[in-house]
Length: 228
Image 1 (cartoon, rainbow, N blue to C red):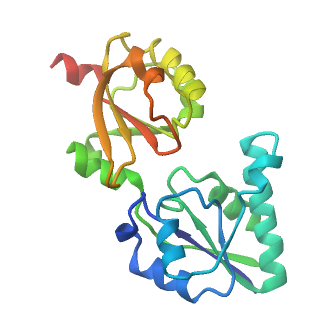
Image 2: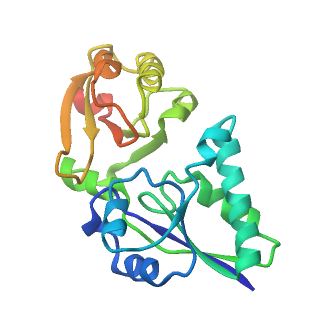
């Protein structure tokens, strides 16, 4: 039976890659990254770890769902041909990682085993930096899925992948239907990195931030917490 082992690169600091994941990347004969655009990839380069990536797929796909499905389908084909490979994604394999969900679903009924290993995501670092206890309730959404919020969440809200000014602008407009325009939100950039920035901004200034990119997230406290 063919096998795909899925690993995570952690939230952005090489020291947060698990020892298991690092050892498996070092020993992998066929190592494939979803993207090279992640801070910890520099550590792989320094260690001389060889890999290929799916960065070329980003230029060809019509939309993200098509892109992620194409990656998952190609991984299954490669595994069937090679017998075994290691697939590596940013963060943790099962936190905001659509390709892994699709890979797991598409592998059912095939001769390819998908072995997903645990990794650290940005949310664990965020809990520490902001003093959040997730047991108190937390909603995590991709910025592209904000329209699924039909009402103001009763718990804290984390929004990931606020990766461009247009995405931030759309997110701002949707959030302003749920929160006051001047509501204070926490803007998080380059979490766990040397130039990490965590700052409070009013909601209406979200799309005016100069450092919006794929390592930008938001934390929004529930309205009740602000009033209390």
